[in-house]
Structures are given as structure tokens and as C-alpha cells.
Image (cartoon, rainbow, N blue to C red; front, side):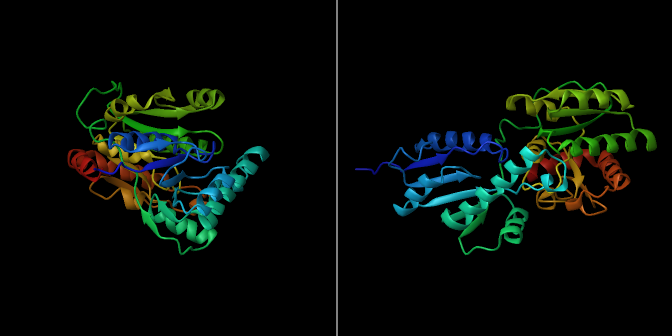
Length: 323
């Protein structure tokens, strides 16, 4: 008689600690397809193991599971950091600090194993919160290669070259990524006379969008927040994806774009050097200290984009292979 497969508890992620909710949904779907049962409540035993996606306030429930001998696995990306540079409200600052404390507390006292999204993420945590003797693995984010594919419909691009920026949120201090994209587009159009349009996917405040429209000397297409199923066709409309997040742990947008055969450009910060080899795009030195938000080397980044254009066909294949 065959033994039934174990059941797992996926602890719902604390709001505001990052963009891993979609990951949890995909993981649950994958487990169920393989015949594993899933619960989202620590008060719904039995389960063989607990996965904490980032952090949670349910510390008492985790302690009960730990005392019962149930393994706890914590998946970690990065830490909140931009709020410390004076780019957020007091409320956002306190919430970000509380989030960091929860993540660190679970990592140190409750988790039996750690899954980091990248080597950069692991090194960041060990530098900021100290090393731990807990067993760990580095598991990069992945995407469905059937959904994210170079073949398929694409959004029409009016300009010969479409520079694409895809971020879940471009607010609360992350407007800086949009400003870097605008500076890059301006360098390419004004200095290098490259005809292009900038396409932006993600939540943007209305006032910022109006300000950008008033000062941009090139077309800007605003998609806002879009359903995940629309991302592949938008990706395929671009000649390059600009990864705007500074010091990212493992950005989904980069892997999704590469899976669609879109070369990636960005500054060589965070986990990007681990994710984007020269066969899949171009990374440029930041030119200062990104942790202090020093002004970046925009001309160097523009040259990286220009290096992509004559090599785009080979880079498309390389990007897909890397994904």
C-alpha cells in the first residue's frame, strides 16, 4: 500500500515585505500538481514542514511548530534599505524596520533551513544580520518557460526601439528606478540620436506620471499594473529590458524578459552579475556607491545599450538559454 504524500504549510507573507506573493501561489500550484496537499494556516495540522515566504507576524504559531519538531524553511530575498536614506515617510520607515526585524528574528531563532534567492542575498544577510550555522541553499527564481517564450503575440511598438522598464512598484522611494530609465532614454535620444520610446510597467503616482510627460522629449507609454499573463507579450515588444532596481536580490522581471528572448541591460549591482552574463545582455558599472544612491554613470549605461543593438540576434538566443 503506497504511503500518501506529505502535506505542507505555506505561511502567508506579511504585507509590505516584498513581492513574493505570486511566488507562493506558483509554488502551491506546483505542489498540488504533484499530488501534495497545502494549507495556509499554522493552526491546521497535520503538516510535514512549514515554508515561510519572507516574514510573518505569526511567531507564536511558528514556535509551536518548532517545539513539535516540524521543520521550518525560510525563503529570503533582500532587506529593506532605501528608507534609511530619508526617501520615505515615518510610517513607511517604521514598517520597513519592523519588516527587517521580523525577517531577521525568524532567520536566527525559528528557521531550520534557509533558501536565499541569490549569492548576493546570502552575503547581504550575513553582512547585515550576522552569519548563521543553519543549512542553506541558493535557489534562483524561475519562470514558466512555456508561458514566457520568444514566440507569440507582442504589443505593437510605435518607435523603432522600445526600452522597457518592468517593476511591480515605482513608489515609496523606488521612483529612482524610473528616473534612471528617463536619464538613460534621454542620453540615448539626445546624445546618440537613437529613436526610441520608453514603456513603463508598474504602479506610478499620477503626479509623477504627469511630471514625466511634461518633461520627456521622447514617447513614454504607461501600462500601470498589469496582469501577469500580459507580461510576455509586453516583453516581446521591447528590444531591451532595463533592470532599474538597485541591489536586487533576484528580480523576476529580468528572468521573465530573458525567457522571452529580450536582452537585459542594467547596472552591475545586486544579483544582476549572477543572472545576466554577456551572452544575455550588458551590465555597466554603477560609477559610484549604489548603497548611498550616488549619481550613476548614465553614459556608460547608454553605451551598454548601444552594444546590444548589433548583437541583438545572438543575445536573444543567449537570454533564452540563460532563463
